[in-house]
Image (cartoon, rainbow, N blue to C red):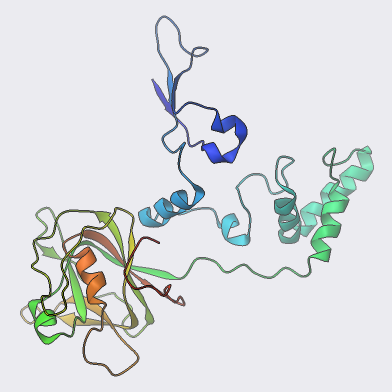
Length: 281
C-alpha cells in the first residue's frame, strides 16, 4: 500500500527532515507493506499555487481573506497573524472564546490570550475585504491554432481550439462573453513540438512552453469570428482599445503556445505584468 501525503519541507523543521519515500514500519506487518510518499515534499508554496491555478481546481476562500493556511477558524496552532485576521473575520466567535477564557480562568494559549487577539484585531482597524482572485471565464480547452489569414494580414487577431478524440473538432465560443474587456490567457495543459515555420518577417519561431505556464496573448475587448461554412463561432480574440490594425494578439506569445493543448481564459479586472517575453506566472 502506498500512502500519499501533501507534506512539504518548507512547512516546518520536522517536515524538512522527512524522507520523500519511506517505509511505515509501525503500520506494516508480515501480511502487508505500507510506504509513505511525499510527492510535493520539495515544492515551494509558489509552485503549489501555480499548479492549483493551472488545474482549475477550487480552493477554500479563506486564502483569499488573508489566511496563510486552512485550519479551524481560531486554531491554537495558528500564527498570531492568522489569529488576528480570524478575529477580524469572525468577531462573534472570538468574543465567545474570550468569554470562555474568563469563565474557566484559562488562556486560549499559554503565550497568548483571546482578549489580546481581539485587542490586536481592533487596533488593526476595520475589516477591509481582501480582493479575491481575478474574475476568470474559461472559454475552452484544446490545441491552439490560428488561421493562415491572421499571419498573412499581420492582424494576429483571433485563435481557435481543436478538441475531440482526434483533435479535429472545433471548440465553440457561442457562449463566450463577447464585448467584455480583459486579458486573453492560455494555461498550458500538454506540450508537443510545433511544426510551424514561424513568422520569418518578424524573426519568430515556435518554442515549447512548460506545463502549467500561463501565457498572456493580448488585452482588449473579447470578440468571436464565425466559420464561413457553418456560421458557428469557432474563433475568439481580443480587440485592443487603441485603433491599431496589426498584432492584436502578441505574436511572440502565440508562437510560444502554437499547437499546444491549453485552457483558454478571459481574465477580468487585471493588468498583465510588464515583460518582454511570455514566461511562467
